[in-house]
Amino acid sequence: MTARYAVIGNPIGHSRSPQIHAHFARACRQDMAYGRILAPVDRFRETAEAFRAAGGQGLNVTAPFQLEAYRYVTKHSVRAFACGSVNAVKFEDGEATGENFDGVGLEQDLVRNRKLDLRGLHVLLLGTGGSAHGVLPALLAQQPARVVVAHMDEDQARDLAARATRSVHSAARVEASDYRGLAGQRFDAVFNATSASLWNDLPPVPVTVFNGCFLAYELAYGDTTSPFLRLATNAGVRTLADGLGMLAEQAAEAFAWWRNVRPSRLDIQQALLAT
Ligand code: NDP
Image 1 (spheres, rainbow, N blue to C red):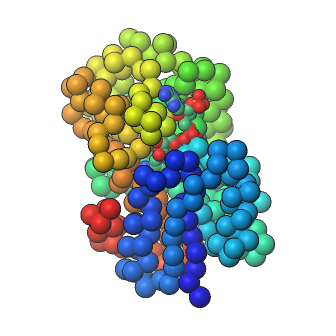
Image 2 (cartoon, rainbow, N blue to C red):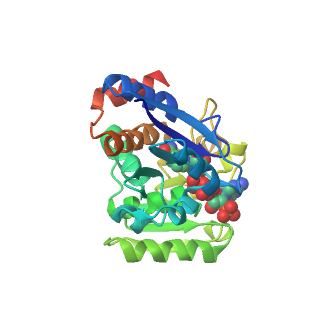
Image 3 (cartoon, rainbow, N blue to C red):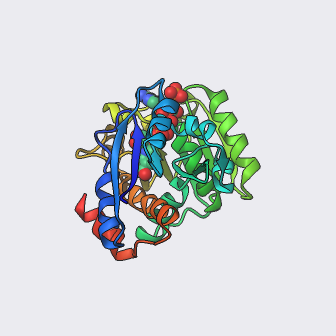
């Protein structure tokens, strides 16, 4: 019987996960279907339960539901527990198990695909939502000198920084700031984990954060360059990346977790070309 999976979010029309998983299914000879589910913003649980009741075997979870998915699942992987956020769910043996592959997806894209090394660097992470929770432990594991988490509300940034500091052994200094507090601070790499780009918007980050910065990484992806990457380009940042590589890497991890067969490096590269 065809196994059913889906990505759930709001908005969801932009998601390239269905193309990537369709490619992996063909390459790994898996009889599976993978769709998109648009859940009303206040109906994540009901929508996920309806999919499960209809025989769904797993979900990828994207904005804005990853923190809610953490509360929805009945069991957490060690990594999901450390992140406080869930981006993949498996329905099996009466449990809804939550995992988080965003961090490993980002790390693979940075280290393996782009040969970038964050060791000893000053890193800025914008946003405190599900994906920021997912990637912060992985960023800290890279042993940067310092990571600043930024949000409109400095207390939210402080909560996320404190949570990650408790869950990861890293020599990195972890700090929190609101956007105004970033003025005049210097960073080597800036990661945009806000969902502003989904609405063609820009987080209110002072342009001075790009002074001397060599990497601007946008977790979102799309057909056009995001306002964040345009700002970074105009400020002279040399290395620009969107989240497509990270998406394909985390998708391969989720596929292997669900299906017990791992897409090859070639499958991942070809999936990227196919999207
Ligand atoms: P969430 O909804 O969980 O969090 C969004 C965050 O962005 C919140 O901190 C929110 O602040 C903030 N935010 C929203 N709009 C603005 C704005 N205009 N200015 C400043 N901050 C803003 O979403 P996710 O964390 O799950 O996703 C964030 C982005 O990352 C999305 O674009 C998503 O598509 C992308 N993503 C990419 C992945 C990949 O594999 N490439 C994986 C996962 C996510 P507030 O708390 O005030 O609402």
